[in-house]
Image (cartoon, rainbow over all chains, first blue to last red; front, side, top):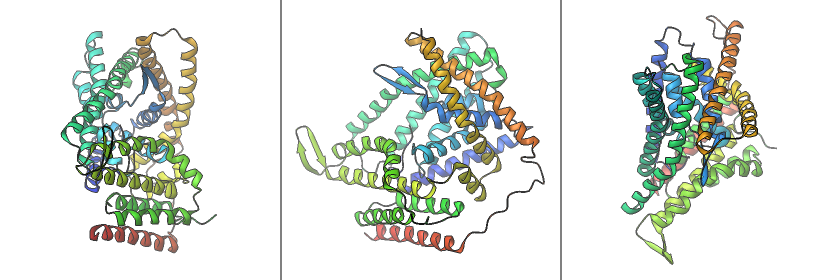
Length: 211
Length: 240
């Protein structure tokens, strides 16, 4: 779900950087307004490392396997720290593995950062629900919804940015293929996030703090 | 072994961003050809081994290859060849060629300018370029945790496999619990490390920042030359 260099036109790449910079500035501003802005740093760094390593966690989904992306979990656990954390994780992935890109770093940060912020909003609004079934539904919506939103943004930006126009049939086929290809990931990530949040709620509830 | 085009990490980042964004705006065949020639020149200048470049390109290249293969058959109106149900179209072929060339050259720039730079030096360069302190600290702490976390993850995954006994659905819950255990363990360590850093004076008011090293004159000229190169390519692209 990372757009590499060379595909998007300059305007879209610069626009992505501008939006990512704006969202990062907003996040840093909200973090600075907290009583101890640096208190969340260790958790944010730990989650950034987890985001970076998430590509190593493969879950078999026949006939293939998927690897976790974690924007929903980042949003639920980090709140306003999520977007800076995703930006750093993406930069490391681009430089170390060539996964994603440099000119597309902003766009990729928006693709994963906006769903993380949406997950943060959802957790803040409904995270107080303690009934097991309700908490599981909120957790699943956080994990799966963030992935689906990221896929939608990815498809929209990729199709808008392609230097050649696809005909309507090919465009529909591409969107359908993208959605179908990522559906197993969304379901897998929804179930994994339910398990993670359920585990943390029982053992260390202070770690699920969406501020 | 030839010298790096630029030695100062801050100017390397500046040159990389200038050239990468410049290259991403090129479309005309003449400009794309000059872009490839300039990249080959930079590879030669830096002495980057071709084997290292090809090894680095292997994984990301696969991602772009999918798009590059599909576009010539799905995009455009002017059919230039037909093989059975597949029709090769001029517009799609041109777009795919442009994407492939821009991707490979920008990726090569990353390897040439920052590929051999330790990540801690890169973060230091970004700090020197004005990255907010909170982001710098987060990046440094992340760097500190990545290897630990990968090591813990590999160990816990092995233990999970050895325990076995998970059905297909149970596998999701087991993976979630593994991830949660990993986060709990890493969180405790992360807090300890950060508090130790603060005790040693990290981030304290009045703490001396490392002096910004003076930029060598040769680096300034090299950066100016690379900016001129990017600007020239944009002009060629505009005129072509």
